[in-house]
Length: 358
Image 1 (cartoon, rainbow, N blue to C red):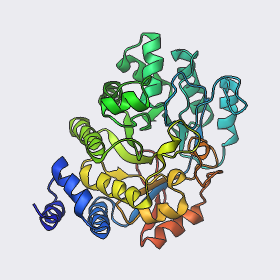
Image 2 (tube, rainbow, N blue to C red):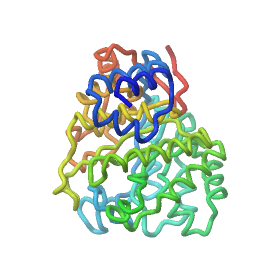
Image 3 (cartoon, rainbow, N blue to C red):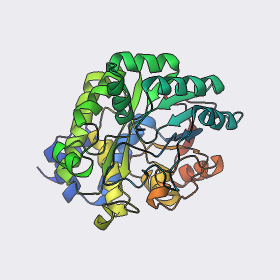
């Protein structure tokens, strides 16, 4: 099949298979990928670029796992390690009162000692301080560890967290689904099957989630497409994913630093293919903290319709990996200018993509 024939099928709304997607990736000019992805994006969200007012709470960077790509983890006693108490976490939440935040994003290392009840109490306290904000908390890896350790099945555990105030789950921890590669880059970490099952269970409980991929390390194109295929199949089954976020591997300060980083062209291809292949996931996010503000503007021409939020210098996961945004903060004016530069319109949303104001 020719590239023109594949492009025509995409424009007709036909679903891409892995073979057609691989051919499009390898043979299509970059402008065509951008054009196809932009056309698909406009069918979903018109001229809108979504953002929210959010901040992160990262309870600790101590972690029972030691992923080879991670620049965030520190051992106990390291001068760059932190481990907040429940009281300190509550105070962080309190410090953001009055800022208009509609979402609190809570992720961190997988703590070696905290029990399940500790996490339930964490959610309850943050929600009590900021009842107007949605709590989006814990990757499937964190959730799997805390529930398995407590001997709590996933449905029961997620229900308890939901009752405490957790309303959504972020997409982290997916990394790459190929089991052989996962064993190479994060052998101690929760499995692909666990990640998928926790998200499937959350969706069946009515808890919306996001999904991610970590790309640009030792994986190949077929591994990326396999990852997208598994997500698409789960979304066909449950419809529970709000957004997909391609996460670029950054090589500063980790044991895989020798690999280097992929180019901006590769980033744009990854975004465009995410939009085209994941035809059932409504939103594709260009996470500005990871790409930087200038590259995020470019990403809006390759199918992304969301750039995350204001952040308020509250995350260190990518700043510790060497990205340019060492103090990540985005003003509303900057968001509006980024959208306008791409010929689009900035629209504030909540965690569930309900529009605010306007």
